[in-house]
Image 1 (cartoon, rainbow, N blue to C red):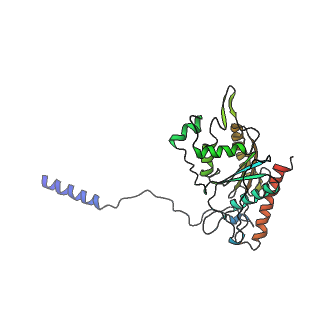
Image 2: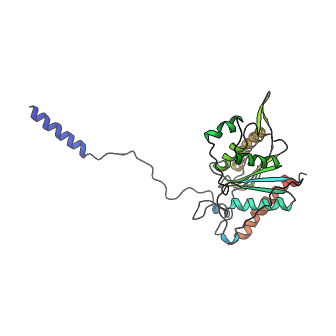
Image 3: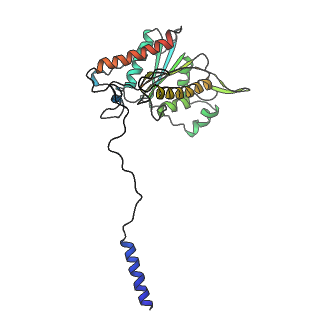
Length: 286
């Protein structure tokens, strides 16, 4: 009887070993990703190489600002986070830097990727950034001196996950530390960087179809303004922390199509649109 039971058990075990294991069902990745509504300009936010907006080779330009001096003129600090100097983001940055210098302001550029800026807040620097404990590193101190010298600070980056790219976020966390950018007071946090402004130039994918800021939507104006008003909440909160004034943003999500026969004209139209907004924000109000 025992031999019969052992034989049956062996057969059951063999059958179990031969059974093919099952795995949870997964949804296959679609071969075609969803795209924004198509029009003459929204589809160009992608090229065959980077999935991000770039300028066609023959129209890529570089601009090197002259930097800060001791002259008593308004100073603009550009903090740019994008490793691709052929991107639309850099085209907007170059356009803006050249325009400010043409208008008589001094421009200092911080190209974070070229600087190999480390956005990761180390354990050693954590409590300086958080509480103002200890002293900043030599590198951070140098950036803070530029911030102190600047009248206007402009952050330039591509929109990833509806926020700044990590290298720019890390710059903000490390440079704009407590007791440098803000401090405790009897009434709460007090901003220390008074009489300065902040502004953002951001290239992005589809946020409703527009160029500019609140009220500048073109395709889906309701969606556009929802995004712009959400960004404004964050910008105003940051400005209150640091004691600065937020001048808003220039947001572009209508990049000319790389395949357009009129690409050069359409890119110039985008650059001119940015200049129009900068003129309204920084110069027409004076």
